[in-house]
Image (cartoon, rainbow, N blue to C red; front, side, top):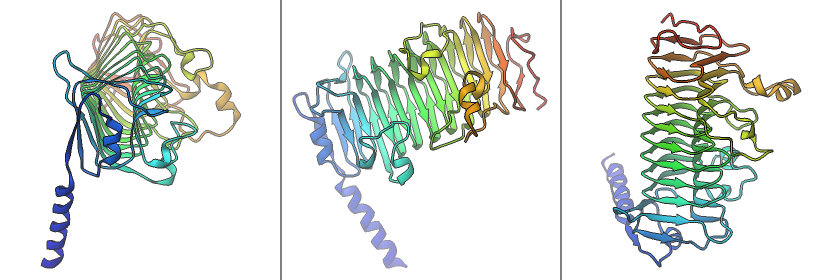
Length: 366
């Protein structure tokens, strides 16, 4: 037993010994450093604007244990900027997911290949048609202190991932979808981020055990959406917490072109709960949204064709939504409660006590 323990300790020491820190400065290639890195390595990037040579992605991470850390100074950002034909900014996934037919259905989500322990921090990522930062099938990640701006589809997008944290990020300027998105993920913390001037500020989709706390979504088309979508690899959205956020003045005109799934989003809603299960909405400030502060609806409300076509692989009705201790102010209507079915949805101790509502709101008995 002692010999076995000694071998384990020696092997662990060998891994630590191999980990190294490499510094990249303007004029050098970040991608070349990533390609040469080993598991556990820390890549430090100094201030400057970097135009990498990849055809589809500016930076690609396909190894576990990579810590990609920018070191911006006051007025001296570390910028990853679109160059040539690139559509994606910083991309981290197993090798089998570099060219997915659908970025929301990554092959690694079915094949089971995973990355572990990925960090991306301190970067300004801008000008990409697709994603600012994309992670697929990563267990244990940290996305912190980044700025994503003018990336057309999504700003920051972890999918089919788990045990991650997104904190201190600032995002703006998506045209067709969300600034900060959590999709088909589990056990994620999203805190102290900001989203402005996006099609959707924040989104939790087909994900479980997400804690979304102390974030600010202002001046987006929709402030935040917690929803279920049919036809995904993960088929539930449940046990999520939306706590202590500010969802205000989300009245921006819809910028999604005709044909995009988000083209039909009506501006002016702070928070949408769409077919979600066991969602707690607590201690948020929801104000100045010109259509509604909050809506609770079922998946089929605006998808009658999909629901009529055949059996769904999801539960379409919102159930057990607990809305408590939130402050609603200066919304056209505070709450629109319009599920076709569902049970256990309730409201208590919100301010004002008499909410402006399109339908009666069940009180919480617990």
